Every structure is written in C-alpha cells, then in structure tokens.
Length: 113
Length: 113
Length: 113
Image (cartoon, rainbow over all chains, first blue to last red; front, top):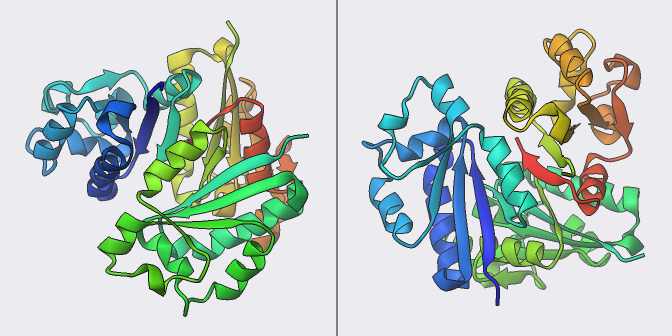
C-alpha cells in the first residue's frame, strides 16, 4: 500500500498544542509506517518552532518519527523573527501557501487545524 | 453522474449552527440526490451531537437526508464525554484526523468550517 | 506545464488582510502565469468586497492579475447586503460551499485562510 500523505496547516499559535496532538493521534490511528506528514505553519503558528518554545520536546519527538516541520518565510519576516530563531532542522519555504499548493498538487491531503 | 462527496470539518462548538447551515445550503444548491455528506467533528465541535444539545432536531433532519455525523473519540475522551452522551446513530472514529485523511484519500472534497 | 489552481476560503472578516496577503505572496512565489486563483468568501468574509471597504484597491489590483473574487449569496442575505453593495465584477454564487465543492471536483486545490 502506498502511504497516506498529509499536510497540516496551522496559522494560529493558540492552536499549537492541538496541532501537535492531532499529529500524535494520527500516527497512533494510521501507523507511522503508513504516513508522510508535514506541518506547515504560517502567521503566528510559526512560533511552535521557536528554540525556547514549549513544544521543543514534542517537535523533536515527532521529527524523529519523520514529521517535517515547515515555516513560511513571509511570516517570519512579518514577525521580525529569523531562521536562526527556529529549532534546527526546520524547513523554511518562500511562502506557506505556495507550499500548500505544491503539496496538494503532488497528491497530499490537506487538514486545517 | 457520480455524486459529489464532501467531508466538512468542525473543531469549534461556536461554529455549530454555521456548520448545520452550510450543510443545508449545500443540499439546497447541489441537490440531495447528488451528494454524499459527512460532518467530522473534533475538539469542542463534538458537542453538536450531545443528546440534550440545541442541534438535535436539525441533526435528525439531516441524518434522514443521509448526512453522516462523525465524532473523534480522542476529543470525547479529552472532554470527558461518553459515546452514550451522543445522539443515537453518531459514528465514532478512533481519530478525527485519521477519518479526514481516509475520506480525502477516497476522493472526498474537504471543507473546513 | 498546466497551471496551479487554488481556491482560498475565507469566512471571517477579521482575516481579510491576511487573505489578500496570502494571494499576493502566492503570486510572488509561484508566478502569475502559473496560477488560477479564486477567493471564495462566505460569512462576514464577504465584507472584503464592499464598495466602500478598505480592500478596494488591492481587490482591483488582484482582479487585474486574473484573481476571481466570489461571494456566497446566502451570506449576503444573512447580512442583509445586496449584490449592488459589492465591488463591480464580484462573482455571486448560490452557495459558497457549493462553489468550493465544484472547484475541488474540477481539480482545484483548497486553502482555508
């Protein structure tokens, strides 16, 4: 069987812990080996990836399971944050919406958190 | 013609009546006979399905038109609610996000409320 | 290469400027010539299109780039607004959700703002 491919979209830092739970629950439900998962963050959602943030341990845990964490550089600029403020390994893309379009065009499913 | 297949995703109880209206408007627009509709609820969105809730009559009306109402068991647990608190006929799934992924993988369209 | 087709969905007037920025950023990222874009507005999101609104100039700018602005007539009715209150050229559809379903059925990608 080919893998389920899922891109989650988060724009609101207030829903950061929900985003993490959603991903954990999805892995529990469908199985790590059956999933490709990316979390695309724009707006204040990018704060999940702050080095000193509350989610560091869970991001680390999920990265080790193959989850890709992807941040919109327009949002970084708007928040006056730098790539260097982000947890190591964070994927930076020119625009979050461009990434969402390209992923869906490649057959990924989309879930807005 | 094959049917339009639509899974609506609701996470916020504050948008419950909007969710119901959206479904009613969709049926009016595209025709009951042309549609397969599921409403997937997670987070506080699951409260639509409470037996003593405000939406009981409309849920009943839409169920009779073939709309499937589907609730995330992780969300039930988080809210300390039981399957037994839900309107009879509610479909319970292991994870709401897993259901959204499987539906999209089967060709269903996705709308976030 | 065929074009990327993207329908953005906005329901909340508070996110109007974000919607406009998202579209501008998408065009910058993937290129006007590679994109078909529609912004579908329902709920209070339809207020973007008010003739006396703050977004008139940007809507005009993006319309000239081929972006289609599409408004749900159910939402207009609920807000007691008329088609005539909308910027000239606004596309009016019977239901916003019906439009979202039809677009996705025709292969358009979906992004909720």
